[in-house]
Image 1 (cartoon, one colour):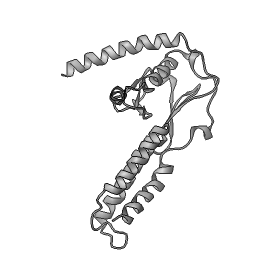
Image 2: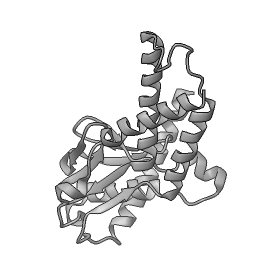
Image 3: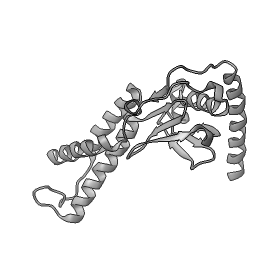
Image 4: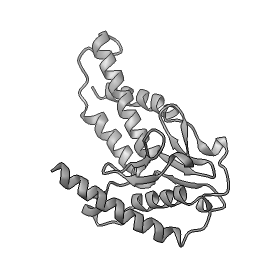
Length: 208
């Protein structure tokens, strides 16, 4: 089983190399940073997931604000924070490529991954982009997973984004010529996670 997965992965990498080289022959360096981020579909899915969480979650009896029990209250708060983080990743993810490298929105900040540390970018089965190279392997973005695009028969944009970033990493003359400023990079998810967690917690308390 593991051998078949490895063979399939090697075949996918060979196919990507061919696609990337074909793409590189048609690309030119963008004059502005290249930005990929959540679409209205992702934001709609996040809203639907938040509503589902609020109406289905069962709070422990001791997790009341008026009559808190430390353990149960901690569990309720942690659950709200964790779900808020997942929702923010789904609705607010962003990947920015400029002349310096690729900026990935993380929990606490926006991390720059320099081009020289990227050898290739792959679309994972969970919809995230896997940045593989000389530095620590990082994941970013949240595209429609390949299995979902097959079921819905829609054209996924994740592989196209992975191929474009791989082409830029391998061919320096294809990288954006501009550099994104601090405001354009945005901030980490934490700016939205805590307020959203408060809203989720309060909403579940009201529906108890």
